[in-house]
Structure formats: C-alpha cells, structure tokens
Length: 265
Figure 1 (cartoon, rainbow, N blue to C red):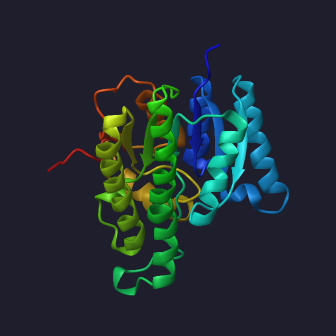
Figure 2 (figure 1 turned 30 degrees about the horizontal axis):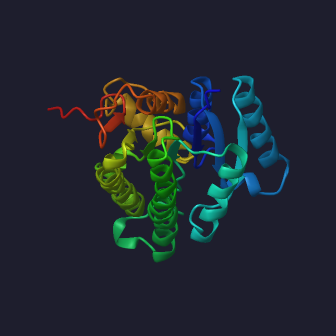
C-alpha cells in the first residue's frame, strides 16, 4: 500500500499556515498542524482547531493537532514524537510560525524584550526545529522511506525590504531566509530540497492593525498588481514546490508579492 506523505506546518492555527494546511490536504498530504493557539484555554481556540480538523478531514486527509510554542526548544522533541506516533513518518516541514513586534517602534527605540521574542520564534525556534526535523528526514531518505522530502520556509519581503519601525521582524526574516539557503546546501546530498517562499503584503491578523496604512500604499502603487495578497495566494506555492515540479531548484526563493520584486523607476 502506498503511504500518504505527511506535512508538519508550524503556525497552522490561522492565516497563511491554515491556508497551507488546507492546500496540502487537497493535494494528498496528511497534516500535522502546530499552533501555540491550540493550547490556549477557551472556546475560540478549540473552535479554530476543530474547524481546521473538519476541513482537512473533508479532503480525505489525516489530521493531528500539535500544540506548542516553537520558541520553547525543549518542546521540539515532543512535537516531532507526536507526529511519529500518529503517522510514523515526516515528508515535509513548512516553517510558517511567526510573530510580529510587540509594538511598532522606530529602530532607535527597539526594545530587547520585543527583539528577543520575535527572534525566539521567527529565527531561533525555526532554526532548531528544522535542525531536528532534518535529522529525521535524512534518516528516512537513507532508508528510502520519504516521499519527496522537503523543507519550506515561509519568510517575508521584509527579509530584504526595510521597515525601520519593525527592525526585529526584518532581521528575523532575513535570518530565516539565510537558514533556508544553508539547509538547502547541507541537505542536497540526501535528496532533500529546501525552498523559501517570500510573501508580500498579505491580509492576515498580523497586518490587520495597519490595514489603513497598507490600503493607502497599495492604492499608491507599491504593489504592481494593486491588491492585497491572501493567505491562499501564498499557500498555492507550497504544494507546487513540495510536489516535485521544481525538483532542480533547491535553495530557490519564490516571492509571492504581486510584483513588489520588480524594480521600477
């Protein structure tokens, strides 16, 4: 019997991560969905988890909720062990979990508390979870048990575009992009491809507090395609990369930004 590939998506409780989980379920993956919100008390958190599970299972896919904050390195082993117990395998890691600064502040006023929090999730936690997952992927690849093994980092145009009012976020995404290249180089000999997906201005809970600002910028033409991006726009890139159509492109960065990558006069 052919085994279904298994994808672990971090930050899958909402926004881009949720859309990625659904896109992968539609293309044949069983889903292990990680989110810190899954362990929050209250009906709202439980409802979000149950709704995601319902939608994933409606696509004929298996589903596992894996609560936890990836900033806590001590929880990484347990997170991956839960996936191993439920599915017995891992084929794709999607590093999507991300947090914004506690408050947008001028770079001259960036506070260590906000810097440390952002870097702990977006960079440090992501790096060490990938390191641990990569060891498992290599082990499976050597045993011929992985199906198109891959790692995908969801970063941001902020990896290159300057936003001095949220310096810690830009730095964290630049570090995640560098990590993608480093892991691509290290894992290529094991047949494991690594990619970076770089979203532009995407309508999510993270951008909602500054929607008026981005509405104005989009109207002024900062996005050549003149609209907000959606989580689904970003999510469509993940099955395309993970599915093998770009098998000779490990280390590539795909920008999903409505043309913001075009340098214009």
